[in-house]
Image (cartoon, rainbow, N blue to C red; front, side, top):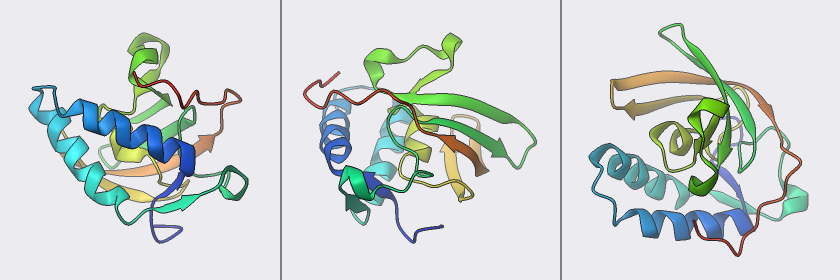
Length: 139
């Protein structure tokens, strides 16, 4: 891991915790596993002010290219659940793919459990979106 731990911006951390708490009410087993793993990972995350966030760390509204050891690659934008639209390449943070990448940096390798099984992923390019996150929103 490039920076030693996940790195999450303070306001995004607050929203992330809210979203994870609300997600406990969903019955989806895969989602539950993803949120549980993410929840344990963010306990040791470095929480930063906006001005201190590295530009290559994945956060809300980042566009990411992920490459799998199985040869596929996927480019998507990480969004809140209410903005999710798979056809437009907008993936919710609460999906297995979304929760797998938040807080990681360009060049990091991760292992994550997807519905199809565990896969090794490499974070390719990370581009930051221009839109600011509305922290007062929940879903």
